Image (tube, rainbow, N blue to C red):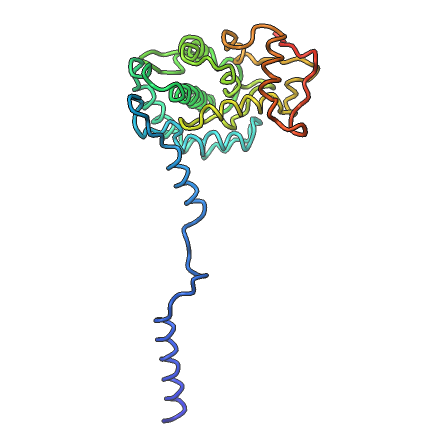
Length: 275
């Protein structure tokens, strides 16, 4: 056999061998970690109601697109006019669809929901409606006038401004003062968008964490000079907030007590509510 034939034969055998060989386990591609995390998240946030609870089985008020595209995008860039407009505008139909689903909920059914289901629904309806208003204004002139805009929220077959929604709907069902510090607004000392999309399963923990973050965030200097200056939106929750300086100070101290000494902001003995 000539050397050329031997070479061709060996080359052919090498190709066949490589085709039949088991793939190297280290080189086998596994699903992308990000996709796996998303799948895991979606699985976790679908709540299974207990017997007797008529909340829609498997209905996910978290709405993954709402959380990832809206809350996340706005928080990452801050309220300084540097919005990811293309992403937010592109996904607005999903936001409108989400609000339409919420508007179909009847109050007679809602009254029989578990408390945490109600809280999640009301918080998420607020933020979704607020984001819709922000899109309408093209992310400009974001201030307290947003709360007076008529018909901003459609819920239980009625239309409300945001202020009316808080006073006539929200406060009828939610009595936890921590909730007041979960809602995004547009003054200097307002809560951020982080932790503003809530699921049924962990809503109590998330609400408490948001309130704790609000009071220990040094950047916003909320407790600077011994005073808690409540934004306009949070003042709407006065019916469920501590009524005087002493009780408000106790409320904040109890709320932030679990935080480590290095992480928490020291409370001034003269802490008071600035009205």
